[in-house]
Each structure stands twice: as C-alpha cells, then as structure tokens.
Amino acid sequence: MASQTGTVQDQVNLVGEGTVFEGTVRANSDVRASGRIEGTLKVEGKTMIAEEGEVEGEIIATNVEIAGQVQGEIYVDERLVLKSTARVDGTIETDRLVVEEGAEFTGECEMGTTVSESRAPFASEEGGDRNSVRSERPEAADAELSEEATEA
Image 1 (tube, one colour):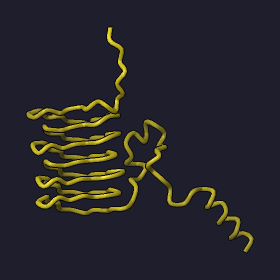
Image 2 (cartoon, rainbow, N blue to C red):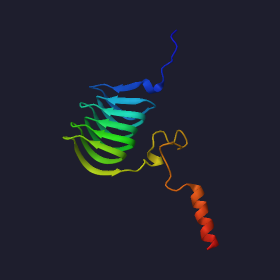
Image 3 (cartoon, helix red, strand yellow):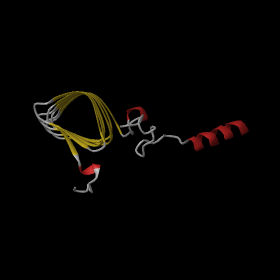
Image 4 (cartoon, rainbow, N blue to C red):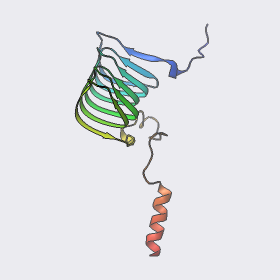
C-alpha cells in the first residue's frame, strides 16, 4: 500500500464542466469550478472559477481567481483577481483586488480590510480563531483605555 506523503495543500478539488452542485462546499485545499455551484464555497486556500464556471451564492476563501460568472457575495482574506472574462454581480469584501481589462463588476466593493470572523472559512468549526482575522483593537489596549478613563 502506498503511503500518503502529499499534503492537503497539494490537492485541487474539481467541480467539472456540466456538473451542477447545490449546497455548501467546504475544503481545506484549493477548489476549481468549471461547472455550476449554487450555494456556498468555504475554501481554506484558493478558489478558481474557470471561464465556463458559474457560482450563484457565496464564496469565502483565502484567495480567489474568477474567469467565469459569479452572482452573490465574495469574501476574500487576501487577494481577489477578476480575469478579463469575469462577470461578477454582487458584493465583494477583500484585502486586495486585481481587475483585468475586460472584466465586468456590478455591485459594491470594500477593500483593504480583513474578512470578519463570521465570514472566515471554517470559523465556527475551528472556534473562530484565524491568523488572518485581526481585531482592530486588542483587548489589552481596551483594558488600558478603560483604566485611563477611570483615573481621569
């Protein structure tokens, strides 16, 4: 029997062309969608929506590259790339956004912020603690401010 020395990070999960997936996809490794997904993608890695791929719902991932169509909400911890063939209609929240010439986006976009804990991939399964999700004001700083206010 062959030993399994590869890591989950080397794995790419595929929703093939002509496939329709309804529901929630949770993955600890990359996901490539060439088919249609109706629901939620929670990916601890990179999500790739191929030119022939479609998503209607929510994408929550570390990095995302879209060449196909997405209608819904996109929450990205690090970088979102809209390829020239991308068609996005919805809401984007990402730290960095790259838009190639020809890409179409209709909706709202918030950049330069980390994704909220409630939207972080697997937050509820892992107790909500992720390195990429940072509080604006640590609790220690809040305690110091509270003490200063009391002394004043």
